[in-house]
Amino acid sequence: MKDTLEQRLQHIVQVEKKIIAGDLKKALDFAQTSNLLPDPDQHLMQMLSRLNTAVRQQMEALMSEEDLRIERSTITKQLLTFLKDLKARIGEELADTAASPGEGKGSLLPDYDGKPQILVLYAVEDQASWDQLRKHLFLSLRDKALQFIDIHQDIPLAATDTAKYQEQLVDAAKVVLSLVSPNMLTFPLFLLAEQALAAGKLIPIRVEEIEVDGTPFSNDIKGLPANGKFVNQWDNANSAWVDIAKNLRAFFEKLKAEEAS
Image 1 (spheres, one colour):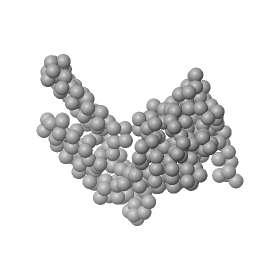
Image 2: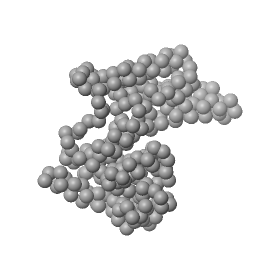
Image 3: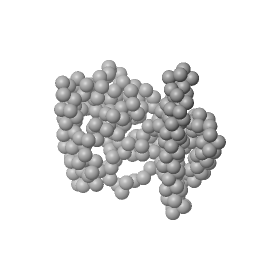
Image 4: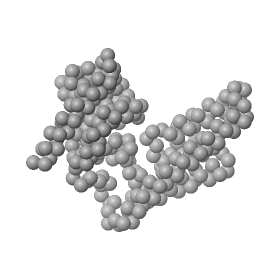
């Protein structure tokens, strides 16, 4: 665990050296192609794409050299902020490791004081849908008796195998909310949904229409919205999110009652 964190720190130092040397392109290439810098939101790829676009536009006389310089400066600041935040997270995990030297040899999964874990499974491309649902689940998310886990964000930096850790998250969860869209029909997300279904803990949240036959999200699996329609099939999408949130809150209250009994 400690070795993995220190490797990540060393990699960050190498990226920073390339930035100091003035080679932003090499810094981004080096950072983006390594699995040592976790980036679930694909910020590195976005920065690299933005830089490549700016360079191409300057070569095609669509952007001035001064504008390219400003764009490079902006991207550099973004990259440095990304690295700073990552180093802060690594520092926190290293401090936890030092405080509990006997731990870290087994599972990295926290127990969250025994609270029922509600895992949210979604594709990175569907972040906006999860953000929309979060708004409607505001009260549930504040409930201290529940623990919501994000399949992408709640991965410790000490985890060397993200896919394996995500499988462990599914195993540990009491419930798995899966946002269903065409983006879920990819690996490893599809396998994680199958794993949750086999364990009897999957609740499909039908967001964007797909052919569900042969998937973990088939119509014989109870999901939301309650009428079986996908959110994008409703005349008013907000009404669909309200329906989902209302049913989930009722489910969570029942779940808490069962845990307390």
